[in-house]
Image (cartoon, rainbow, N blue to C red):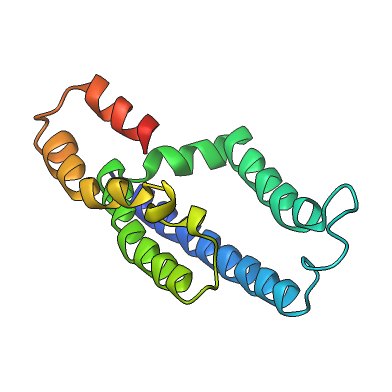
Length: 147
């Protein structure tokens, strides 16, 4: 990758990181204001209107523009794969929250949510499958689909 492409990717990644940070702050504020707790019987649900719909629109814009697709294509598949390691501490926190009766069991590996397996296997897939080319494409696609 050329230096100009790296700089462009870095600048776009910074913009996306800033946007995601603002997005998380807004979602935290809405949650703290109990916006998502009230009127759960109304359709459409507020979580869909204020949480899911805008996020999906942003993803759609990113995927439907040439600049967005070029940015996605410039990202490292190895780094994406290693990023799945974050699932291990996340699942452990969810398990701890379940033990303290803050989240339902179904959100944890005890409740058959085995996302932690993706996090545990990610470094092996990234290293052997992507960096060392020891795994064929079907195994990598299968792992990605299952995870």
